[in-house]
Structures are given as structure tokens and as C-alpha cells.
Image (cartoon, rainbow, N blue to C red; front, side, top):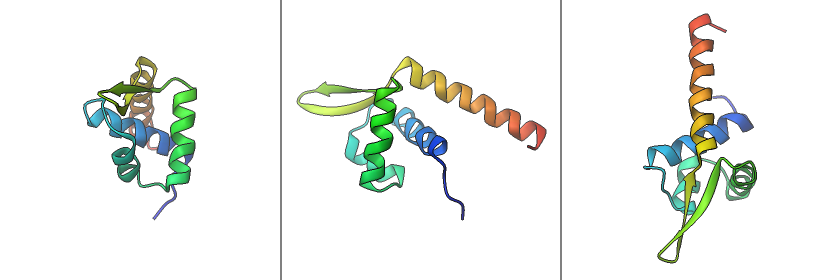
Length: 89
């Protein structure tokens, strides 16, 4: 078993949001992210600060959604993984 790095965890969180039709409440996102509540807060704060995600208030409930920057990150990250796989790095 390996330990995920910060970049991988951020990627996983963004991917979870995307797979949930770009619309997920913080608590289910926490559960699915497989991180502790404290760590999750750190990662989510970082993603909010850097503009990868934003909070959306709908009918009094908070949802986390990807921004254009978040979608672009996922696209570039996928390109990097493809490059690594192709060259066996």
C-alpha cells in the first residue's frame, strides 16, 4: 500500500466532484475522499484558495463545484499520467 501525496489527493477530490456531475455536498465528498476530516478541510481550503473549486448555495445547502480552472487541472493531470504511462517513467 502506498501513501498518496498532496497532488494525488487534490486530484482525487477534483475527480470525485467531476464524477458526481460537478455538484456534491461537502460531507459526502469528505467520505468519498478517504481522508480525515482535518486533512480534508486543509485540502478543500487549498482548492478553494487556488480557484479550482467554489462553493455554491442552493436552497440553503452548500455544494462544491469545479471551476474552469479545476476542469483544466484534471485535463492536464490526465495528460501527464498518459505521458508517464507511455514512456514507462
